Image (cartoon, rainbow, N blue to C red; front, top):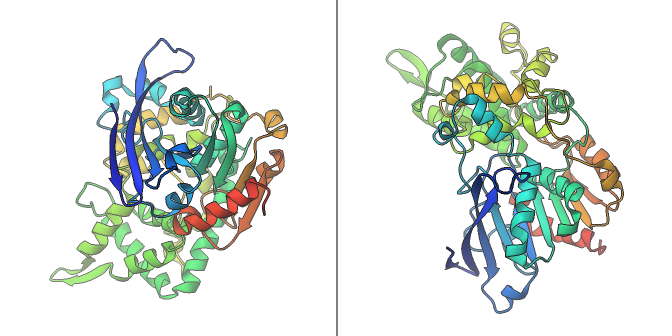
Length: 433
């Protein structure tokens, strides 16, 4: 069943598809995918070629646009757009603490979720493409993890693509999760230092908050245990263009005076709760390190293990001295499954995924070296979430890939200046820039 309706400048159609849970067993269990089709309201929109959008994440449903805001309006000048909720996200057979017990216990849940990586997402795209386009290839636009999926698409099914556009999402092709985080923690330290250079008053504020948390460890209204490492993980905000400002305003009203003395303000606790909870995207945490899993080596909570190699992030030692507290970001760690009530029921499932040693390879370097699909990628200089050097190394591997390396944006360039970013990528892919 499809439902069609209008927003300013765009005609939207909600579409649902049935695909195999395991594409190697097409006669087995099936799951549902949800996608929203967007066509320009002006005459002629229905005759344009297709673009499929793959959201960042993992574990995030496609952007819910209002009309033709951001990059969508620019895309609709050239394309019909399919906004896909990747399996397990949005309205595509959601996978979370409420639904996963239907699968059974943690072992059954982990085996189920092992089929929710880029390889399965791309096979989903190929399964629905004939129904959407009549068999014609389409353009893929991949943001962040969506770019990881697009890179796998080029490895596994390039015949399904006319063009690949990637923003902040060129993955390491052969690096283990340990390599990803050994590159990430120095970036996190740089982002922390840049924040304090902009807002020097936040050095003392962050230290004061951390000292309070070390003594009190409050529980937020939703049941989240606000520990010092949890507070440090607010550094995730520093990966977006306005994130440093948002972090600053969050820190500035942390305390209020009460009859019992200084306490964390309700406003601070409410904003921290919203920033840290994974209730709306649990698969981001559960599957995060598995997106780097390839071959027989377990990811084994890489971010938490590698963090110990960078003593500057040790809050206890920091508070014993006078150094600024370092924030972290783009690092899912095991303690999060103790702190976050949306993740606690999935802790054992996540442990089993972290111990898994049978991950299929995601990228075929020989096929990428022989690539014939036009590819353009925006690479953000010193991107907090995706290592720039890893991305450029991958760019050199993919035949014909053209990059736009820029420091105008953080990781969120497509959100912050979507029409401009998309214009540049399309020009690069078409050889016009």
